[in-house]
Length: 451
Image 1: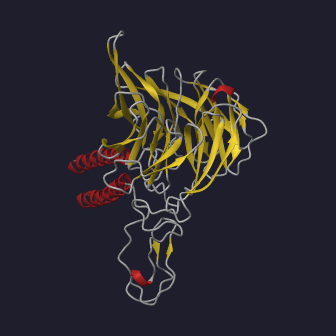
Image 2: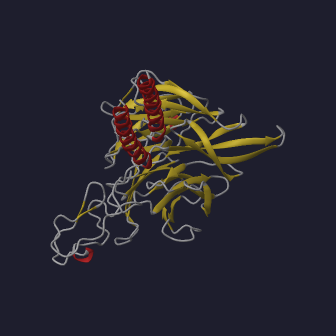
Image 3: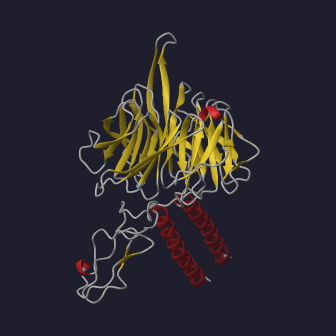
């Protein structure tokens, strides 16, 4: 009888232990990745969310701002690993006759689907937002305050306000070293050098012939594509190293109307431009040839973003309170638009990636945080200066860590610190699985001895 009770006791303990392990694994494992679109609504007290992986795309529960006096500013951006979305809100206080506004950057935890922090950026209207490809900084264009705020994504603290007159669209180079800002007052693109310290002024600029609005950058960082109020799209070849001069080429293309947002396909071949007053989207290859006819969407398309697999383009229609979806394989709009909040703007990259990674920039040929190398960029390293006396051919692996298999003799370098390390949550899960297996074995052994 005692043995039976002991068996039941061990069995009960074992079941509770396994249940606890399963719960712990659930909370320590990373959330299931989904490509979600976050839409800033300038006339609503919430952010709309769309699941882009559903067929058809489906609206999810919206995310309310922290107070019912806040509405969204135009800009929105998402982190490269899909963990966070960023939207600026305008909060009104004071009286109807004498309103007082303040603008704050809202940090949205995409796993929890709620705002978890706010960072005040200024008392006046903002425009574009961008996140550096290495995920370290968020940039906010303070349109009326005439500066760009730089926020640290870890501490959620503003580290600098860089003066830029009437800033609007923002793009960041693939290596996260340069920030390009549309300076509407002076008809130019201002450049912020993130390699300097402290960051206090614009390092250089690219002159244009009319006020710029939106900016897209090529995957290799060698070209900027800039929309402008005078129905133009500028193609700007750039070389920040100035080996061939800052501007390597500058051409323009006439559009069918006033453009707003612009997005580039992941392969860098095509641009999709929202033509606000023409209720349409123009498709333009990066060689400067536009599609024969634009894609009609809805009223006043403003923000535009492309899913990370390049298959679908999402367009926020400010005048119709909807989002249109374009299939890039046929360049046709899906039949049904998606209802969102009032006056959706979504100016920026508002769709989280399909396959988020802690090293989302591995493969851009630039050395980013956590990488030893990237593509052909070996960071001036060779077999010889890495401890292999016989020389040989040092290369970079697909995980952005050095491959020394073709190096000859000598002592090998210390273990690589770069590459795609495990997510901390994955490490915790692995530890949990190991511990649960070990504990289960101990329990079974005790049970057998007791019998």
